Image (cartoon, rainbow, N blue to C red; front, side, top):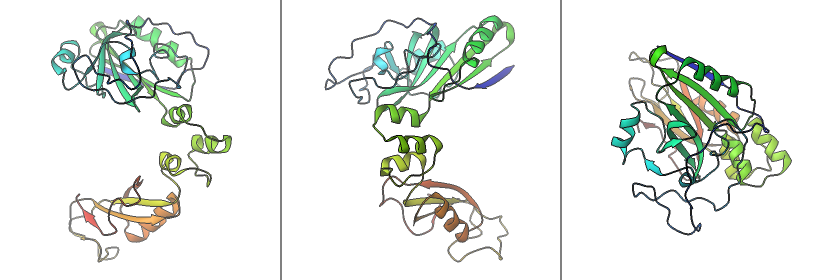
Length: 279
């Protein structure tokens, strides 16, 4: 039996209830930082800027991974991870016995923890309900959470995921005017945005990549274009310039009916202006 709850985050002012595992001194920012299994950790700014008071996760989100505990890479230390759980935590790093959980998966942005996945091997229904109530009572736009139970109720495991909103993490790490910050939170492009900020919300002037799903095997003579192979079974990608995301969408729909995805490109020189099937 498996059940899932998707829950909003928490509010500032909540006292963290979980105890953390022992921490390690990260050392100077310029020093090479390595995981417990010998891999170099991603570079991170020396000062922690993102902070949120949140049940179970408040003292971990925004930290460098080695400050959470002895950190291991999920691929290099797969046998160690497999002894603790067979579940896919969706993270590249993990620590053992952190925040009261058997395993804590860590996802990083700019070298700091922006995703925390707590795995409890055994979680009685009362414990699950207690954790769920604590998190459900909070509402913080900076953190999104979900709870999932795995297995039968009498011997179920629990996975609790905390995801930092990328906009909120960016605003904690970078300075921005009030107008730009408000626009970023609303995912609305503002001419005062930098290219980096516009890319964060996937809007503004620049190059866009449109991905089109292929037509049915029989083709479609009415809507087909010489630019596309209607009999192809592979997705087709096209890169072009646009004033903003809506302009890009309108341009794409004029090219072909089966618009599947629209993505703003980071590199202005990336991609090709020709149809690119299957790449």
